[in-house]
Length: 325
Image (cartoon, rainbow, N blue to C red; front, side, top):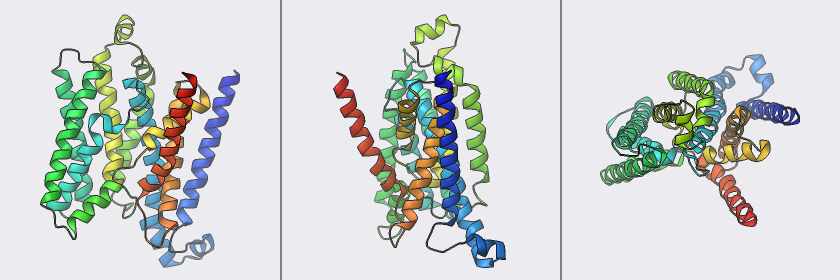
């Protein structure tokens, strides 16, 4: 009972923190927006609010929530505390897809679609390669993901070689660093719907996800088709992550930090931990976006600030782990 009350307290605190950060994100930036100006009907403030701030606030909250929740799923399914979307080629596939869109397509929407297609194709290829192996377990998926990651990185290097050094190459590098700049509320509806749909499905499959954290033989003894459930869960989580990073570019450490933070607070691997992972992820991405747009005279990549949080946290985990040995 005490642990349940503790979990509820952290979930309420996480929800309140995410709401406050999202509200702050609507008003913080180079162009000053005030509640008084919006109420008075200032046309320029409303235009900036609707076309720029609202979309960034939505993506920061929902995108961060999805990345944090997906990180929990990856770490649980692979039974690896360092698991992230990189492990099966999602990020590298999205990077190669985005580079292709920047070189050969026009418009930000086309780049988003191309990045999404690259991420999904990479994951499908990794799952197909894994299904051809004899083991067909979590380790085979990791190995297949490494192979697909290398292939996508090779494709990315080739695309960089033919890119215009002054314009296209800079755009590719900036996309890879990750940013919420330039996202329009009118072009993200499909991605948001996909992210929300996948999130709901993952929460409904929570019990199956926890069973995947057991040994495969134990899962089979409980009557679970381990291979099929693993593939379904990974594909859904990957679709959700792809929907986010195809809009924002690569966001470092959120999928890694959020689940660790939730487990440190709740000391378990339950549904409340999965939900808290999403809330922490939303707070991290929203906070990183606020810093990215307000600290310097020019907008900085979000991954700079998520990495500044992530690296010390990883060092702390290493020291904490070594103290226990």
